[in-house]
Amino acid sequence: MKKLAYLFTFIAFLPASFMSAQEDKAQLEKERQEIQNEIRQIDGELRTVKGKTKQIVGQYNLIDRKIKLQNRYIANINKEIRFIDDDIYLSNVEIYRLGKLLDTLKAQYSRSVVYAYKNRSNYDYLNFIFSASSFNDAVKRITYLKSYRAYREEQVNTIKETQALIARRKEEQISRKRQKDDALKNQTVQARELEGQKKEKDVVLKQLKSQEKDLQKQLTAKKKRMNEINRAVDAIVKRLIAEEKKKEEERKKLAGTNTTTTNPNKTNVTTPGKTVKTESFLELNAEAKALGASFENNRAKLPWPVDQGYVCEHYGPFKIDKIQGVNPGVTICTPQPGINVKAVFDGEVVSVFNIADTKSVMIRHGKYFTVYSNLSSVNVAKGSDVKTNQSIGKVAADEDDGAGGKLEFLLMQENKNLNPELWLRK
Image (tube, rainbow, N blue to C red; front, side, top):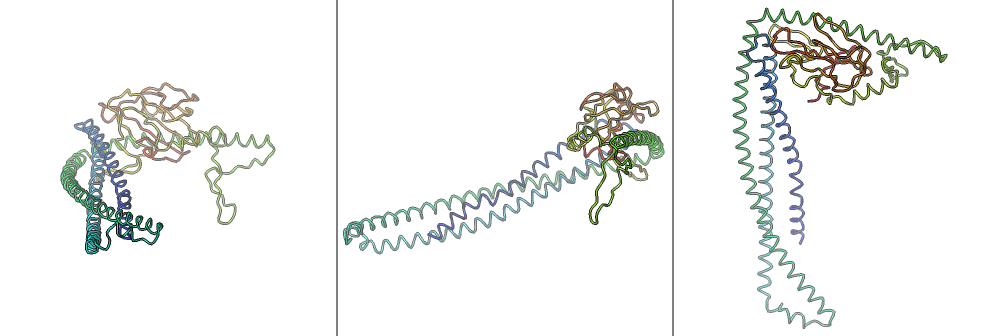
């Protein structure tokens, strides 16, 4: 009976042992779908910029991004193969254990059959019952015989169940081996695809080198534009902080409290081992504080500032061969100029200013700011409130390649630049 109890416990445990692996495989499949969707999106973007000699940097960045995604895709397939190998190994162990148990069950059943056969005359049911010394003893003997018969039936059923389970596991083994074969074939296909992408990248890199002087001119012009934007934005943020600081001092003066203020960005040590960061002057107002907190809660959920477009130049420092620079935000290329530019969150327009022949809009969200630059037209004014997805203007033409539009999008916490791609919805 102990053997049978062990078998049932073992069989009941088996589905749970595969649960974690199934969840991991589901997560892998989800990740693979996301990678494939992103690769398809990049392919569409590449078709848009291919052949446009002045967008060669964007083309290079897209191919580079595609190669990184392809490497992730191959790593995903490798994980799948490892999971399948683990499944096959565990299944082999299970089949081996079930086989051992089946041998034990058959041996036990065989012994009980032989024993019953040898003692069939001594254990004739009727003689066994009628030879009881009392009625109660006869009832006990009947109960015993029923239990023994049930035990024999249970042995037979358990043997059949074990045989069926072994057969199922062997079928699953065949299925898993097919899955592995398919995964290995896919791995080979994707490795060839990666090699093709690397060759394409080398071709684009040669084109970049041949256009190095023109690209340096473009980069110099962009640096100049971005420096002008940064100076304008920095001045606006400082002005707003000064205004809020003055309001706070006046409020404290009226309240009769100490008018001394501290730097809102400075961390003050109050007690040993403890630091307290003072509040931002931009969030002393309860409404501004709530708006800033709401903005923070929407990290990675903010809508894109344009419906049609892709990031053609990423945030932060970049280097392509000898060409290098720093992007304080993200550059979003659009299929054509004139596409609507929309606010990514509720806020107040704190400035509308010009950079060369184009316009820029700066919106405040508590202590956060978003800047939309290189607009051909603007339909909001300083001091106006805007809502999420509200149109604020139109994208201007790309100066480097007039076939499309280009939006410079910046995100800041006070005067500190942040990576917009971490805040925008994927």
